[in-house]
Length: 155
Image (tube, rainbow, N blue to C red; front, side, top):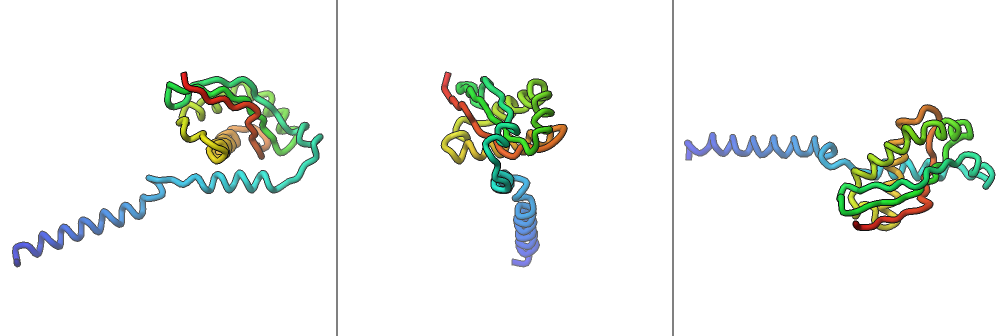
């Protein structure tokens, strides 16, 4: 029994260290998307605009067609972006072909078809796009994204 005691202590110490390390790294291994979704929803609920204001601050990107992470699926999408000001819409229009569209294509390429199922999947994808694109805008922020056409098909 005396010869087994050091082994038992070593094994218990190793298990304890593994559990503590797993607990500390849990958020980095399994990140949660709930913060992104809530932030996007709060931005949308912040303001009520008239129809003319919405039109003045909305830009569109049409006819994006690309493969998803699963190469057997293709997505064809038109997207309307509501920005916070009319000036930021003008800046968005200038860079949408050279900066925004490639970022959208990359985001789609990293997405699996099952992640886009249902309204919840589309909401999570739109909040992901809001966060990616807002980091790359030169001026202003995107407050809302709406899919005006969304066709997901297998090849």
